[in-house]
Length: 197
Image 1 (cartoon, helix red, strand yellow):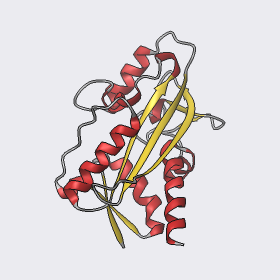
Image 2 (cartoon, rainbow, N blue to C red):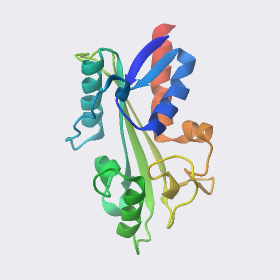
Image 3 (tube, rainbow, N blue to C red):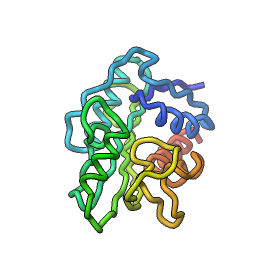
């Protein structure tokens, strides 16, 4: 089994990545298993932050590293919360506060269009000059109140097109097939399969 470190302490992400990489014989370990602190994310773009997190985790673990930088971009808010999605409601990070702030900022807005973005970076080592980078989006709308108990982040507010359900109301297998993270990971898996073929 091949080991790689996930540059995140988010249990939801660990579960999603672990499930999707298991068929390729990868064991996905959280960075906290190596006592790696969270990397700084000072950059204005998802790709720069994902690269910074992957290099940080690879350097401190000595293993290949997978990082993603994901966020929610809302049309009526000019793309906010964007790269600040995890801390939109302030420190420490809180899904409940983030969701409350998003609803407050959208109060009175008719335009509820939004999309999730995921940029995935896989490094074979910390100085890897050719990182694998994949990006995907998941388009939907922001609900006026939270629905569902599944998922994490903004999922209770994200209406999945065509289903009439929030991302927190669908199964994990449905979410993996539809979501920004699932789509980006599918691109990564396709590349990894072609490498090993």
